[in-house]
Length: 79
Picture (cartoon, rainbow, N blue to C red):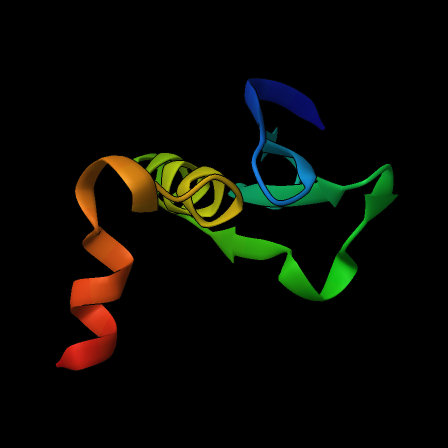
């Protein structure tokens, strides 16, 4: 597999999210490493590159939510 994207954040935990292209299976895989450990149950498989990139960006935000700046997650809990 070839890594096509990787980003990390250090909010509540140290998290790295990477997107890999698996040409053999014609799919993209999003993988999460948190505090140095691969979280296999968080792996996400899709045939759509944009879906993989959007999911990876969402997973990055989960690791470092903009609570203090925007209150975004607090608003969601009230809905």
